Length: 173
Image 1 (cartoon, helix red, strand yellow):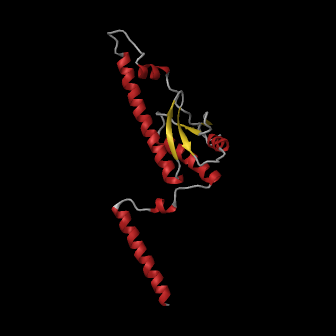
Image 2 (spheres, helix red, strand yellow):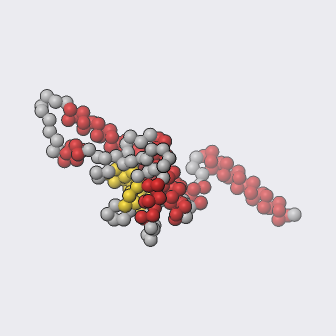
Image 3 (spheres, rainbow, N blue to C red):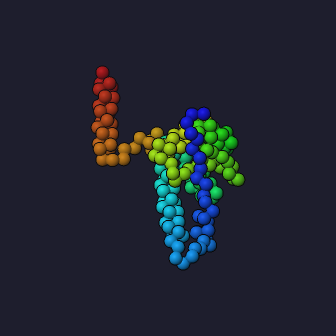
């Protein structure tokens, strides 16, 4: 086992009570209001962690996912039909990222609002490695190679012109 295993955030019971409006506090207490702010900030951070994981999976292996916030926080992978999800979940779990199958047989990968940027990168890299090796899938080359910024488009155009010139010169010779 290398390093520390990254685990899912366990949602505190207070989270559900606050969402359902069931939490209460004495009139002079500011605890409940501060807890509400803390959980709102935590949820916003969790959403950003999810966005980074989702973007990484889409860009590298073309797999989408969705955020799951139950007792544990995770991203549920949307893998191709016929995938041996048990093997994928076990392999990701062996990469020191907590992973499991949900009741629908979807692979869930742990996320946590307290992950560092390095932890988020490790989550994406571990999932991508397993998906690529076991399923042999990746984002389409055409989509992955599309230039996004003006500078990238300019360099891509120059490279394409040079490639055309080279092929024309070869045909002349």
